[in-house]
Image (cartoon, helix red, strand yellow):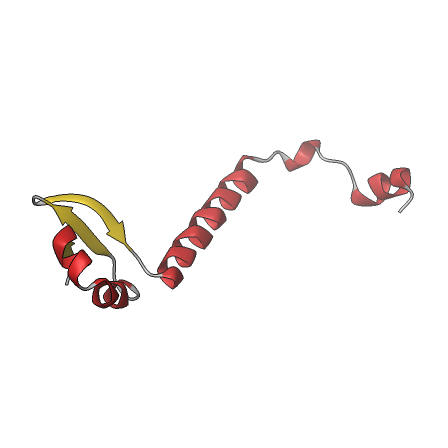
Length: 79
């Protein structure tokens, strides 16, 4: 089941949701994809991947040569 119609989703939503736990399911209306159902774990993996990708881009763009020594800053803050 790679795709379901909205009518099929209405008839048996639990079956479609159970399948969507492992694989994305396209929801179609009149043979046009209107959306996708994905399971909780897959959604969380996608979000974690995007956050990691964003963090890597920020690190790559950072200029660490302009930074200050941690010990110096901690001394100024009194910690």
